[in-house]
Each structure stands twice: as structure tokens, then as C-alpha cells.
Image 1 (cartoon, rainbow, N blue to C red):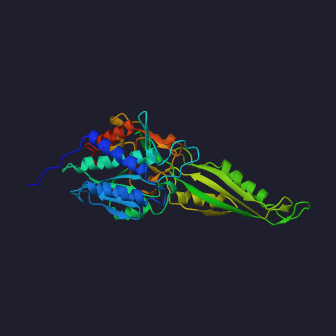
Image 2: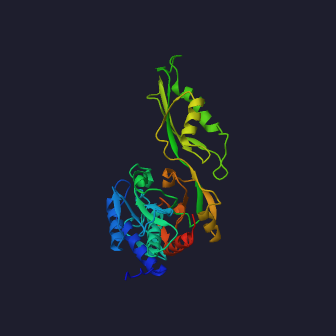
Image 3: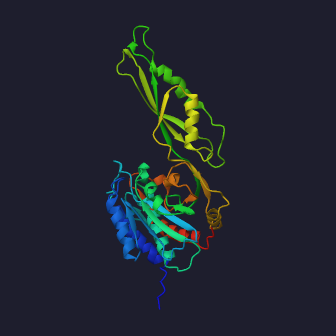
Length: 361
């Protein structure tokens, strides 16, 4: 007779999740350098009897009794971090508990969400019969939108019906998220002596296009995300005070909404400006999920609010329904002495479990 699996309780899951989080904090994992935290996650899952897969610094596992006739829910978060800023007063790599808070780099963004999702995966993996398959994916390079993170490994996963993306949202539901596109613009003039009426000033020529980026309004407005936002953030021109500059280059930060694809926005830009426009990437599209979707309705029943997120995550690379939710607070991300409340981890595990409870896709 096969012995039934014992479903772990919330207290046990929380204690183990916090221990794993402390180990992750104590292991530097800057983007592209996450191999040691990938080892930690891989070994932890294996210690639970889970068969794991790995590609570069991405680790994933499928729930047992995987059934291709059932929908698949991916639980995803990242284990890379930004570099600590110089204002830290605590060692960013020493997990420190003070007054119910756990301090350390990556504790809030997004270690708390990651370990809570791993705990949720373990909870449901012990349940033999469930209406969906689960996939846990701890991925790399999210902080730099790198190509060797979730984008690299998605082809290994098969059909995904829903993704829960773990980021600090105070366990509220981010049902829409702006995308990101960056374009570099170049305006060419003609060099000349500034004291004489010579040359063609590239800065002056650029002003018209810069003004267009500042004032243009796209015709379609997203119900959740509002308007597409374009901001000129960098400008470079000139070599010395008495030379009319022949080249002016500037960079534009663009935050697309779910009513435009990045390629559409790029085409509109090229039709309206005279400068040369070179996009860095059009990969990071905006995303949204209908309020009527079962996962959103489940969250609402649990008393969670829903909102549109101004920040970009790995959702931008997912061509299927996804929702962003996790313990912690986005306002703490990338700040000095980053922390997460220990209670937030417990609440995160509990709410993730309830969010999936009886979910029908």
C-alpha cells in the first residue's frame, strides 16, 4: 500500500520558508550571478523529494501526478537582487531579525514572495487530487529584464493556463502592469564655429522631437493603466563651447499600456519624429487580466483589493494570463536596510493557499 502524503501545516511551512529566506539573504545573488542561490533552491526542493530541473540559474519543478488533461498554474518569482546601495546601515548579506522584521538584501524583493510560493507548492504537492497541475519556477535576471531568466525557460514548461507572479504587493492583486520600452534617438546637424553663422545645430533640431515626446497623447487610453507615458530621460550633445554640435542624442523611457503592443507604439513614434529612432527592445509588453477571471474573483472574495501596477516584472514576458501578488511592500524594494515582516511571510503562504483553494480554470 502506498502511504498517503502528510500535508504540512502552516506553522511548519512558515518556519521552513523563513529559514530558506535567511539562507537566500546570506548568499549574494546579483543578476547574472545567481548560481549559488539556484543551488540553494534546487537542493531545498530535492530535500523534499521533489524532482527538479535547471537551466543556467533557473530552477523549476512540476507537481507529482501531473495530468496533461488538467490546467497548469505556474508559481513564479525571481531570486536575483539588485546591488545594495551605499546607505545600508546593516550588512545586506546577514539576515537580521529586529522587532518582527527580517532585514537583508532581497528579503522584500522578492525573497519573501519566492519562499512563500515554494511553501504553497509543497502544500499542494502533498494533495493527491487537485483540479490543476502546479509548476514552481524560481528564475533569474528579473531585475535586469535579462534574456536568461524566465524568457529562456518558458519553452520547457508546456502549456501554462495561469501564472501567479510573486512580487511585493502587500498581498493585493496587481491585475494590470505597464510594460517598458526604451528608445535611443539621434539627430544629425552640421558642425560649425559658434561665433559665426555656420553649421546646423543638432540640439536645436532635436528640440522639436523632444517636444513631441513631451506632449504627444496616444488616442487609446487603458481602463486600468491610463495613458502611455513617454519621458525623455537622457540627452547628450556637443564637445566644446565654441563648436556648433553636429549630433544630439537622447533617450526616451516609454511605459506602454495593455491597449497597445510595443511594436505599435514604436511605429507611431517613427511616423511622427524626424530623428533616427533605435529601440533597445520591444519584448516587455504591458499585461492585464480580466476582473472576471476566477483568480481575481477568488482574491476579491478573500478581501484583497485589485489595482494597476506602474512597475514592470516578468509578467511582461508571459503570453498567458497572469497576476502579480506577494508579501512585502513595493515601496521597500531597492531601499537601504530592506526588510520584510515575518508575519507577512506567514500571511503570504496562507493567502496563496487560499487563493488556489478550489480554483477552477
